[in-house]
Length: 177
Image (tube, rainbow, N blue to C red; front, side, top):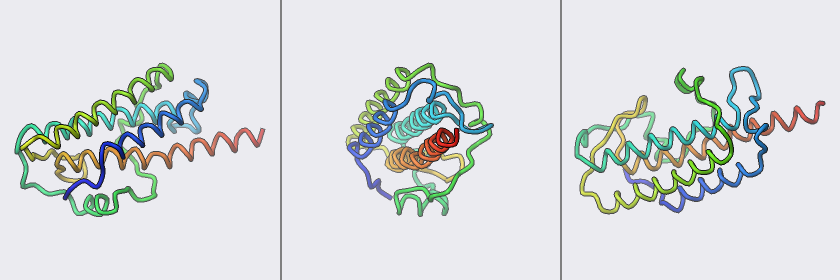
């Protein structure tokens, strides 16, 4: 299974998240829409942490041939074929509740720039590495580097829906005051 995306696709979605960040004030970034719900800031921190993890997994795959004959799970295959997550709310691990608040917009902005550098490094490695190892995703089987890279961009796009729900909640709250 080969990735359907490029560094350009990845950079485009990172740029979109960076542009959205500029539209928020710090108090909006830190405000939670509901008890137990993430703030926009926590959503950014989750995306940064998850994407760094996914890109590191891709680098590991490009450093060896371990698990190269392992498969993705049947649940993962349609995600890669359609190049997106279904439009549903997916409950993550319990540890997601411990996602910290960011210190500020500068922290998030710098981390987004770091993601772009990291993704560009992974794509360069994918074009030059002779290794095709795989590492295990916690719930979807084994992925190669291209699949981890594709997953990272899909995950960033998927969470645009959550961002919209948070924005809509606050927009409706303001109207009802």
